[in-house]
Amino acid sequence: MISRPAAPASPFDPPSFSYQILTSPLALLIRALYHAFSLLQGPGVSRNSNHIRIVCISDTHTQKPPIPSGDVLIHAGDLTNAGTASEIQVQIDWLNSLPHGHKIAIAGNHDSYLDPRSRGRSDVNNTLDWGNIHYLQHSSVRLKVPGQGGNARVLNIYGAPQIPACGGKEFAFQYRREENAWTGTIPLDTDVLVTHTPPKWHLDLPVGLGCHFLLKEVWRVKPRVHVFGHVHAARGKATVLWDEGQKAYERLCGRKERWILWGGSLGIGWWLDVMRLAVYGILGLLWTKVWGAEMHATIMINAALIDWRSGKIGYEAQVIDV
Image 1 (tube, rainbow, N blue to C red):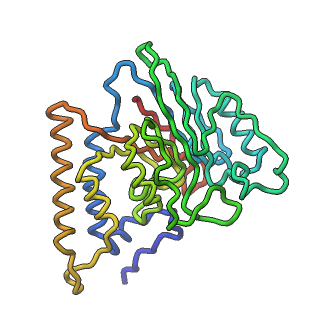
Image 2: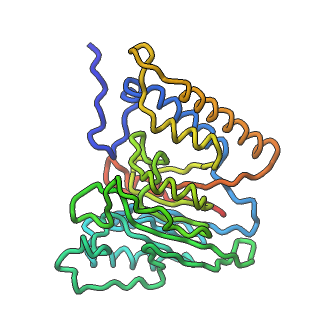
Image 3: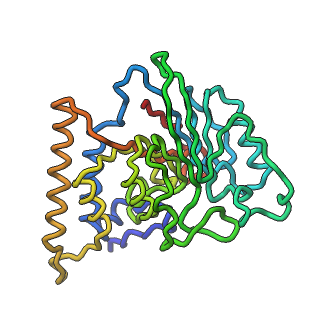
């Protein structure tokens, strides 16, 4: 007898292919189609010869992996495990030792000291020395960065650490999943957005561990780059085009499947959204790859470095030119 594929042990573990085929084959097909279009669009390499090279990392959890060179280094949270001031300071000192001209860091849920609500009693009187790192906590920094072509360019970077609740009181910057912690918080002139949580349905596993309210806020702002982490198993990079196909994909991700053969009905809306996803995906490829035009897009990067299976460094830093 063939055994039924096991469900993931944790929401943060990726479901097996066989489990997805059995439980949500249509959703699997939709995700495959969407990610195929994203892959064909490419990683969004800048055509500007005066580009800025951004190195993206997240979820190092006290580890100190090799980091490639670049103009700006971004750490999207979870520098540590226990989140004590001393543990965070060790990671700060490591980041300060790296040669990048500009460095950005935000907190993750494991960086307990940085949130007064989760800070341990032994750390009440301790402080941190951030050195030359820009630590962003619901705040922005405007960087003047020498581009690769020799001319200085300006980047507006906004960072925020809050995440939908996923643990106990020792976890930092948590809010209830149904709570809107994002609307109207990100400046419209943001070029690079740094959060710890992903936006919902983007590099956050099929279950959708990201935040719905953050997704709506990213739709409003449409930054050039969005760097995050938190969901280690969804690490990767994707090109997001802000069009009707994108809206259709997100609606499809939120639908619960009901098989016609099992007495249900997918409905006309489902089929229309599948058609929108396919048509806009093809048009986007024609527009950018055949006609050579540019479309307003966001490069989303889940920059987690720790492998979800081993708890050790399993991935490399991701690099983007803007």
